[in-house]
View 1: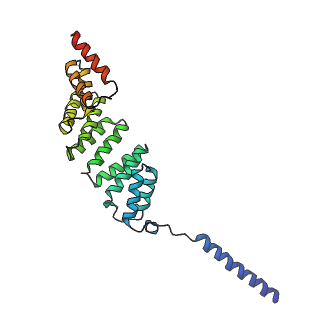
View 2 (view 1 turned 90 degrees about the vertical axis):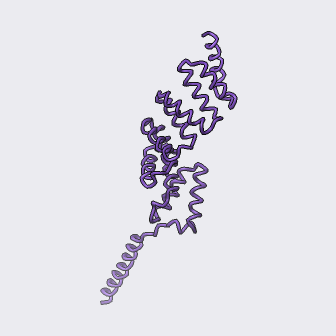
View 3 (view 1 turned 60 degrees about the vertical axis):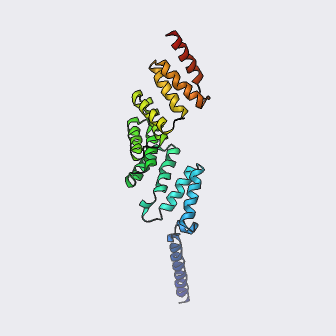
Length: 230
């Protein structure tokens, strides 16, 4: 009888220990939320912004994910959505960046910087026509930003659409008269057209603003030589 009682006690203790082991194995440690680490919205958004400004794009993406995974009403976070899309762009993860820019612009179709950077991304992906459409959309939202007109003009030059590029560059100069690069690119277009008098005028204006543009003096001397010959 004692032996049976002993065996029963051993089995009972073993059963209890086994059950406890299962409970420990199945226990799931709660995942930390952003509130466990940061005390306020402002604190975590400030940290994200600092990472973004420091060009620590991978860390920026991870912190945005950490924050958004624990949030409701995500559609209110335009700035975070933009930083995520732009960070993927800078990391050269172009497909992901485009996905997130498209998601951003579905919620915020009037966000100029979203369209502009989407255009820059598509240009980097060698999708020129789509890039041009994005630049056009950015200009439609705000036509007074000179650098968007300039980047659009440079794209048009790459696409060999010189007439359209000239119109865009003159728009740049209407907004920012002393833009040396706009004068220089206008000089290059008229140079290719063999209109050396016009090209020289643009080149000299560019030099008066910024004399350090590579190749500028060579183009000026060549134009002078051709004008004399003609």
